[in-house]
Amino acid sequence: MISYQPSRAPAYAALALIALALVAGFLPVLRMGLEQGLSGLDPYVFRVLRFTLLQAGLSTLFSLALGFPLARALARQSAFPGRAMLLRLLSLPLALPAIVVIIGIIEVYGARGWLGGLFDIYGLQGILLAHVFFNVPLAARLILADLERIPPESWKLSAQLGLGPLAIWRLVEWPAIRSGIAGAALLIFLLCAASFAVVLTLGGGPRATTLEVAIYQSLRSDFDPQRAAMLALVQLLLCATLALIAQGFGGLGVSWPALRLQPRRYDGRAIAARVADGGIILLALLLLLPPLAALIGAGLGHIDASALLLRALLTSLGL
Image (cartoon, rainbow, N blue to C red; front, side, top):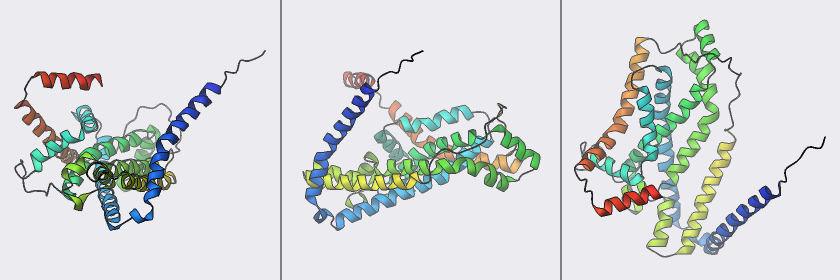
């Protein structure tokens, strides 16, 4: 019997066209960047690169430091009222435009906001606050997905052995999330390093400028495409290096296949654990809800159903 083998020529042709399009789009940038040469690496470029690494590193650190306890609290307290609504709320910052979130943050933490004077909203603190608002929910969702993939047998065995919180963390939880933590950190770092609207609005001038904003300024203010291309190559080199470093820590976690038991955690039942997890969830709500409430309050008071608004709404829906 002769089996039919479909031809792979169309797939190869499509891949070749995609590669050709990428090369054709990248070569002019590469040529202009190389024409600028090492002479373009002046102290301003190194200052911008240093601030890019600083704000992205701190944003990643704070996002993971807040996102992991939130994910663990949601994983341990899987039956509290409102959990499903909170999970939907964690997805909301990813769908909001950056400039909309910035307006909400200014309404809360700006000089005339609800908590005016609590933060220096323009500068590094404002950038970190906006990035944490965006990326704590992302980190929590990614880590929660890893925790929920732990086989039910592991929880049953840990309960039978009477493992304490530290032993559960060391033997059950950490092996499940360590393979994905580097990927989550890399994703958040790259999002913060390539952040544009947040840094442009809250950066506070040349002292708080990232590579992404410097590229924009080189094209818009200085009209220097060669310098912009050189900065783009520096950013590309930075992102590629980080991706290669994270590749050594990534990969899918290897675990025993589940026996189709219903997932059920036996830890987190003590009063102290419930109070601690509740406090972490409350802290997350205090981070997410005030800017959203400020946006809703300001928006409801200034709704103008004009033709311009309707046309913009239809354009957004169409796109």
